[in-house]
Length: 183
Length: 324
Image 1 (cartoon, rainbow over the protein chains, first blue to last red):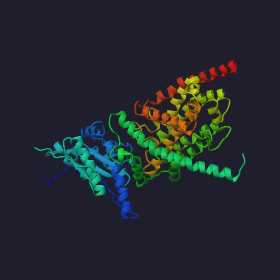
Image 2: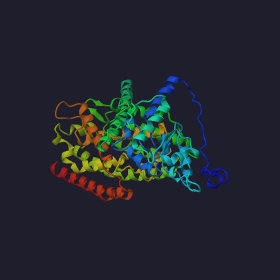
Image 3: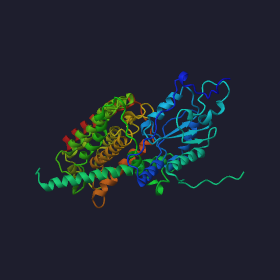
Image 4: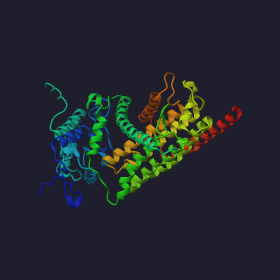
């Protein structure tokens, strides 16, 4: 084989990674930044956006037993303009990749991405020699904040991922950690 | 109407109080709605942000405040920013003639309900402008739906209110309350049950709430007329929606539920209790019923509500002629 094909050949598939960066804040005062960061962390509105079976777990995490609404993250906005969190739940095929990039670029500025499941992290079970249809990891397209492994991840794991994003925004963990299960 | 300084000050104070009421109402109702949604779906709803999640609505509004404001390419810049403001401000005016209590009316006017019905159309205009100015196909579709739905449902709404107006013989909201008694069986709800039902259905459609929330139908048009609005534009649309809900609830309480009159101790608390019961009813059916299709929505209106409200008006007129 020639160069290691990581499943992404931009000229042919017409997929280019997301562009953009973060501008420095106009008013840069620590207390104000901290205040708005806490508010952002406590109301992460996800996009109504599912790609594969992990999306079932995303639905499950907002439903009765797990209830992401407790942490203020249940307002699934169908329009990306009003959303903060993009959960890439599932396999990103090359056909879907332009849409993923486009949705990411359409989100207004404080935006966070959670790669959910092995497919979104690395291609998962679809990564093998000679595969032609799958993007091997969504981080080749858009910047990812938190990776949640699993195939599919448990709803608790997705909740943990949301907590990790909150920790990433504010710099501290807000909720008590679950006890480790002795093996 | 004398134009004295005192009068001006009174209106100014009333407008400020109404702004406070609208914003406070939106913050409380966002929390109540999400909590009620949670309980209806057997989950706790917002729970961890503040005690029992009470800070959730404030946190959300702060986040929306700090969100990037986005204007799509080729959007009409002026109209795009005018639409949310136009959604929010006319609602202020609509609260002026509402009698909150026996001595608590901002502006005692002989034809208050005409003012309310006339300026209620501004809400639809803002939806239309918002959808049109954002240069988005979903926005335009949502705007078209908003207009056709609102025009359709305003007719049975007005006809239902007209039956009550025939009965009371006045357009003044305070006098309509005065025409009703203190006890629940003396309210217009009892002698005008059909009008009450038609008004309830139409008010849900007028405020674009589920099951009639077709202008922002999330499964078909991503978010309808406010697809392209982020941050405070979206928040203002939401604020206006809750303010409109509050307004139709107050009108419902005034016309059908005896306004500020109650079994014991008349006062503004009765108006608020009744209005918020109607509000809770709107929230309740939102989380209980699925959304109707658009042809079904218009069929309900033109084939059922409109003939029924005409019949109701006709019977009311005959009964008033025979008895009175």
